[in-house]
Image (cartoon, rainbow, N blue to C red; front, side, top):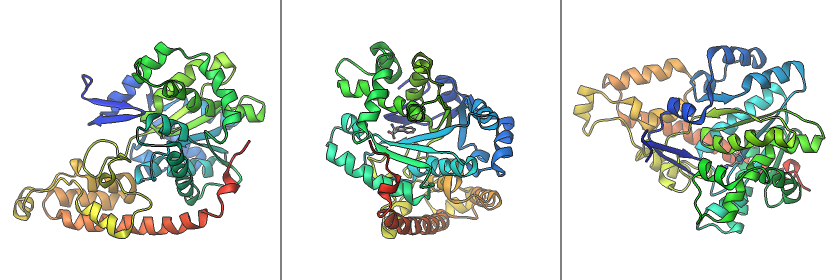
Length: 373
Ligand code: TRP
């Protein structure tokens, strides 16, 4: 592992991520109070993910606000690699993206990289990643994105349009750059080496479709930033603006540290889980508690390392008063892990049950959102 003892690439997150160091490593800027204030002037409210520093880093966000204030406006772009069902960690940036769409009233392009997950996934066939893409689309629609302003596509199905943009990118990115940025080797398959051109292409898609240069803002988890560093480097060579970014941290795994991985099923809660599965997963989550009740009553727990606390912090308890109270009571030994687990189980179950109803209804709506060529 690198000297900082954590690894973050688009395909691997390992160790305890130091998010401040990561912004230095990647060369991004932290979101400061001034930027938050400027955003709030437009949105009229402070999103808890901004307030809590979950969305915490950016590139060129001020330029996006300028473009919104003075013209020519901007569009949003985000995506999903369909390697499996959607879990809560994926929903986090999408929820924020929807908020941005609502508050700024802008269009959103949503890319599903079934090609990526096929080329990188050792056990995944193309039929699998396509099938998961359509499963994931139900989750996207269930969140309530504006039907008239949201355009969803699969790389393999929107290939004619995408290919024509991606080759413009590919021509300007050389092998040594991808090796340095992504750690590829001579044994890496050439589809994987090419792939970043597809992820970059979507940043220019709205401009291509509208026939004019239009600023693009990409909300995403910070592990995706390397793709967009490459994108930004070549943007003006093909006559487009560099895309701007707003980055979030990654939802920790229920098993403690690391990003919630879709491949370790017990460490993540999926939108397709039953209440029984949710109860079981949260029941065996990693906490900051002691081995015995007596010891915990005496010494207290440690919310900072507790996955249950992290879930409340990142997603399920936006009330600062209640959350701080819980933290204090955990530290003092007044509150035991069983209680917090039960509380979180209720919150997650309510959310998922409601989401699943919307997910069912979404099945009728898919084509209304799809971008086809
Ligand atoms: N590579 C991303 C993943 O594995 C999917 C993706 C494509 C994406 N375009 C994006 C994610 C833009 C965020 C923003 O999930």
